[in-house]
Structures are given as C-alpha cells and as structure tokens.
Image 1 (cartoon, one colour):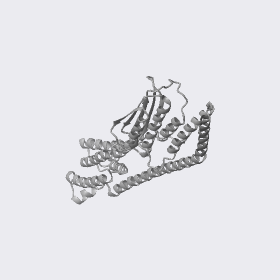
Image 2 (cartoon, rainbow, N blue to C red):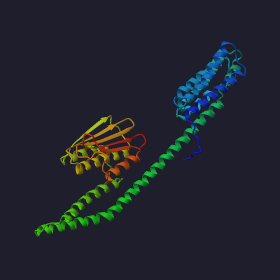
Image 3 (tube, rainbow, N blue to C red):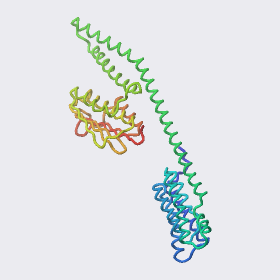
Amino acid sequence: MDKGRFAVPAGVTDWAIAAGVAALLLGTGLFGPHPAGSRELLGSALLAAGGLALAARRRAPLVVLAVTGLCAVGYQATGFKVLAVSYLVAVYGAVRAGHRAVTLVTSLGLLAVLSLTALVSQDGPAREVVTQARNTLEIAWLIAAFAAGEAVRQAERRADEAERTREETARRRADEERLRIARELHDSLTHQISVIKVQAEVAVHVARRRGEQVPEALLAIQEAGREASRELRATLEALRDDDTTPPHGLDHVPNLVKRFRTTGLETTLTIEGHPHAVPAAVGRTAYRIVQESLTNVARHAAATTASVLIDYRPDALAIRVDDNGKATLPPAPTPGLGLLGMRERVTALGGRLRAEPRGEGGFTVQAELPTNGAS
C-alpha cells in the first residue's frame, strides 16, 4: 500500500471542478461585453448555474448535459457571449459514461438552437449574428471534448478487461493446481488406503471364520479404512471439479436433498426470493456448502431433520442449513477439514460463512455469497 499518496474523494473533486468552471464563466462574462440591469443578473445566474451543475456529472451525466445546454442558450439570449465551457465538460462526462449517441444528437441540436436564439435575440446581419453565436459553442472544442471522453472511456474499458483477464488467469492456475493435487492424492493415497482396508477386512473375516474374538484395534482399523476411503473420495470429487465432468450447481441441490431423504434424514428445501442466474463459481460453492453440511449432519449430528434454505437476493445468494441434532454450545468444537474447505471457498468469493451450534439445539451453517462480483 502506498501510504504517501492521498486520495481525494470524487465528490470533492467534482465540486471543485464545478466551482472552478462557474468562476471562470462568471469572470469571462462579467469582464467582457455584457448587458446591464435585470438581464445581467439573469445571465450571471445562468452562467453560475451551468458551472455548478457539473457537480452531478458522475451521477446524472445526461441531466447535467441538458441543464448546461439550456443554461448556454439562456445566457446567450440575455446578451452574454461566453464559450459554453460547462457544456463541453458535460459532453466529456456523458461520452465517458457511454452516452455517445445521445450526446451527439444533443450537441447538434444545441448548435442549431444557439443559432436560432442569436437570430431572435440579437440585431444585425444574419451571417454576422450566426458567426457570433458560434463563439458560444465552438465546433472544434466540442469535437475535442467528445474525443477526450471517448478516449478515457476506452482506456477504462481496457483496464477493466485487463483486470478481468488477470483474475481469470489466476483462477485458471488455481484450478490447474487443484487438479494436480487431486491426481497426486489419488496416486499416493488411494492405493495405500485400499490396501490397508482390504488387509483389515481379510483379517477380520479370517478371525470370525475361525471363531476367534476379533481384536478391537483391528475393528477400529477396518472402520477407519472405510471412513478414510469415503472422505478421500469426497475430497477428490471436490478437487477434481473441472471441465472433465459437468460441475454441480444450484440446479443439482434438489436432487441432493432427495438423496439424503433416502438415508432416513427428513430433509426440506425452501427457495426464497426470485431465482435468477448466478455466476458459476457461486453456484458450485452453494452446492458444496449444502453437500458438506448435510453430510456432516448425517454422519455426526445424530439428527432426524434438516432444513435447507436458499435465498436469492438482488446482489447476493444466502444459504442456510439447520438440523436438530446434538451440538455443543460455545465454545464450539474445532472445525474439521470439511468446514475449513467451505470457509476457504466462501472467502475466495468475498462472502461470509458462519457455522455454530444453535441456542435451541442443533447446528446451523449460514453463508452469504455476493453475486455481482464473482464469476
């Protein structure tokens, strides 16, 4: 972090520019040829209003474009012959915001209106009057403001694309590393655990066939081997979630809930909000959260019911899984690898995860995943 750099808030900058343009217009108008009396007061007010309107150019660029254009027509009609600097700044802001067509049409219309206003409000030959009207909005300055706004817009768009490209590259490298780890785990662990499990099962089978008492340690090795195989298989499925198999997402959650019902766990699924498309990474993470939460309920919680809530919010997706099993009140037990994996997935997407015992009994897992910045 660069601590030596002071960032000025955008609102302060906008007001400073607006005040500066207003002062420039007033100074140019009042120190040059200008009308007197009430027309001077009205023209001065329009000059100031056109400049101060620029303070809202980021929030409402088209409104500011219209206001500054009307102010330019107004102070020209009162007799002030001042370059429409405020309108040029508004053109820059509107084009930078992406409103090129509207800005072009508005500017052409303003050029025509300024000429007509000069013909109506000023005396003298028509050609001379129209020539003087052009001093209010020089075409060269208008083209320059348009070009500057477009150049900045293109530069910002390229910067955004470069940032997205860097994020996609980093995500792809992380996926490749995850797949490499999965393959190494498969090669180094699966075979050894399978051998241990088979040897333990054979030893138990032989002991029972001979009518001998099976040692508790051997039974523990057998059960541990089975559990390790299941855990490793689940971990490998999560790690190898790549393009070789269709990734699971929100569409697969109903089938997931149905599968857990067949195990005897009374599971319900509730959808709130208005379902809409979410980024693929958010959908995969939501599925994994529900899968891991229900798996923990079925294996460890001694629960009879579990509820899954998916809430579609305008800028986030909320997931909540509750059960009525046995849970220790705070301090909670040390989280396992499943909970750690969930937390890492949620954190990577900029979300929040809360997993803790409920006061009324059971356990709750709550996650909130932003949908406006994930991909």
